[in-house]
Length: 112
Image (cartoon, rainbow, N blue to C red; front, side, top):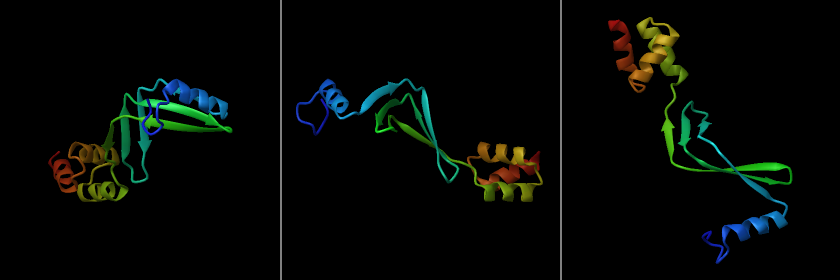
């Protein structure tokens, strides 16, 4: 049963949607990743993904537990490179290893 729709079961709902010209299908996805504007990622492992096709438009519905993965800002990366003298790849690696702690990343790179 779907909450808020009385006694309508999922099969009845699919039938009603089909009458309205809305086609639905389930995607077998292992992982869904949203890349956000701030550089971080929202990762959903083992999601339940449904696609509704209505009037030529596809609507994706994703259900699952999300985990946020913080990104490294260009400003932080630039500062670590300038202060440590390291290359871009080493600076990125140090920031990832220190969970974005700029001071710790710089100290780590100066020790090497």
